[in-house]
Length: 486
Image 1 (cartoon, rainbow, N blue to C red):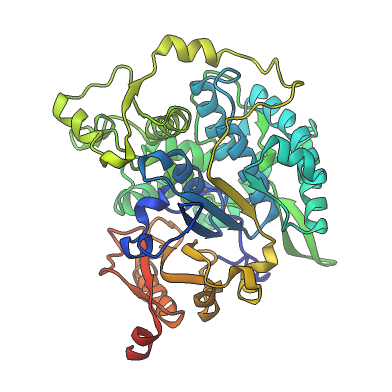
Image 2: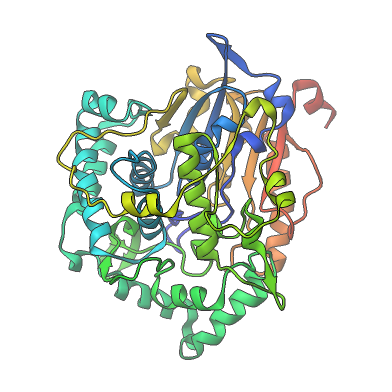
């Protein structure tokens, strides 16, 4: 999506498709062609425009479900603010359980992820982390000692300076620097136009006739209307949500009476909602029960469970189950039916343990951070300009086994990307199924457009795509003989 009149891409603050475990999406033919290092297969993954890091987090958290592999992630985003947010999400996920309880971690994550306004306690957490992030982008040795799984060596000095500026802005306590309530209202008025006075009806139409009809029926009217009106998606704790979430701020070139200027504001989504990423799909069948054709749980409930499950599995390697889950033995056995080589067990976290850990204030913020250590995972942040230059760098040639493109960045997918993919590589492209802005005819035609673009780039579809069923499209890299036949 390009900003009107600027040719720029709007920041993807949250994705338009549910979070994926990329090892689950990877084609079997791709797995068979992996290279090995020290007898450990390497899976090289390029994420272009993922935005919120949801695929990265889910893949890391569920890595122990699969045979041991070394996971190398390479991330390119349209905005540096998105890389900064991913650093924040990553460190939050890696917080030591002794310093932050599972429930508190999940609540803070959801607030930062999808709320225009957050609690003062969450703001304090973000400000504390900014001190560390500034050191990380300015001192490579410190960064490697604190977050060894993160590789910033490719980031240019100019971009490091910009990241430092972003973190300093986040750290500034003055709320008037980012009046998101005013930004949200102005953007809402511009989008709705004459419909603004009857906006409740517009919200209901978008929810029922678009999101629900396309498979996001978990989103309730109450939570969706609240988010469309105020930008506050998740209200889990009974607290006061009154501090602007500065991590949602970004810059865009806009036309002003004095010419084009670079303006800070809120340029993200105001129609689809943050619920799509974690709130409409789950492995927990008890959350999918309906009564009179309506789901008894909401997208907030599902988001909270999914993130709790991911963070628990990251620490223990075992599948999380609800302490008071209402399910029969047959459902329980089915939910834990993973391959034996994944050796994933099942465990339950007691509520009293969560409450004990969750009430911990950040008393140790002045101490050296003690994050969870993860083996066989390296995350490379790449410069924004490299999205069109990767094939010109020899170290990337025939490297990537999985490439993911968001729908906002797919215009960068060209035949050059075939040069940097390994044999039988998997290409995953996000579809526009849940983009409320688009008419259904454009959503349908987008599938054909993506298929054509992938074919021209040297990738063939693996199955028939259905615009109403699929939220991503999967393709396989063709070899030279297959390409000539087509």
